[in-house]
Image (tube, rainbow over all chains, first blue to last red):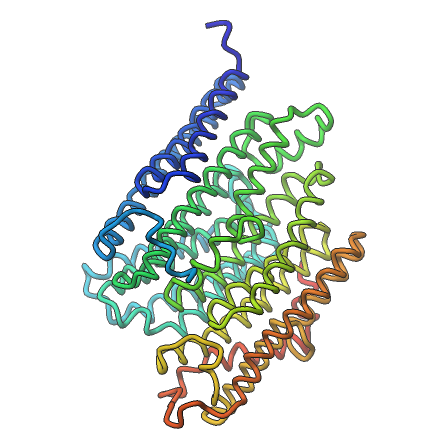
Length: 102
Length: 458
């Protein structure tokens, strides 16, 4: 375990974050986009815990709890929005939703 | 702190009102709650008190913005009675608006990145729901989905930035971060700068600055008109207050690094916003693009940080929010009667209701930045502080883009004074529908004639 430094964690979270960003930008299914946003937030959680451990400072881990709670609230709202949309449009493909651009 | 508590309690009471059969009195109760919160907020002037383990700091900057936010929400409540009467879920609407206001107040009072994040999320999550509050309407659904996706995407960036800054400084407190950066300037790890940039990205998404503006026209256009009004006046104010507070209090020691970013962003934002607004036929969409342009002018405050630009930002935001409330009041009434939101649907306004047309003109002049109205001094103070900051090229671009802006603002004014297309359009059923328009007109004029009352507040 001694070989793993903070830079490895930094790299891992950066990679996870980039996978999340790429997913949001390139996938078309709204539910998969939600999952990618969750991935972005979880990579932040990983990074915060790693830094918190490095600094011997618990506030980073407390922040992780806040992120988890907020992410849960966000997903609840997001899925409710999706259900509402599915009722009206019978689809969760985001390409369907470019009516406002005309 | 009292303000945050009162607003949250009012919000929770609104949410619970279904149980206690208080629905009838809810409108009055919310207004009362807002008034009490406003009084408590104003009483905090000059206190510099810090609460919750130094996580919240009510300095004068926070007091000014909190009072402005609550005041604007109060005006918004006055013009939005329909929003709460025509729906089955009225009490949720009250609660969501009050919660989002609480989030906005937290965003102006924070002295810790945790509170910034929580405030931003409380504000945003309530707004995702409000944007989709017209449940059967596909446009509203689309606005809600887009706002949600872009909003949480931006949150991801903000959080990653916060994590990196935390990694570099091992604290979330603004003061401690600032001290640490001051003490270790030059020896900071690269990822501190990456973190600053990511926080900048996350927050500029929220204020809809180019290149992160693409969601704004769709969301502002698709949301119910009253919710759009709230977003443009109150939410924009909270987002800018947070952005300015964060970068001035926290990242001031590395200002050479972020000032050019804001300067370029500001220039591109105002040009693009104003040029695209010229081509819009829908009044609502035009105002959405014009709000992007205004975000550009407001970013000038961040390109030349200092006391002058702080005051300029306060004045500009106030003038803009007042004008927005006035214009949207007209837009909402026109939409209610004609069912349309195009620029030409305000035709005949002068004939039907001359006072409304004149007040609308005043609000439009305020947005365009032409004297007797408040917007002129907003732009004037902003330009002066930017020139003093040494960015003359930015002011030149700002003046040029304001000239473009004058064109499309006058299109609306001219339409209001033209003959109506249909003879029998009765615009305003009750004179009380326009109370807020008149209040906004008077405030715009007062601020334009006596700007010194607000201009030197901080």
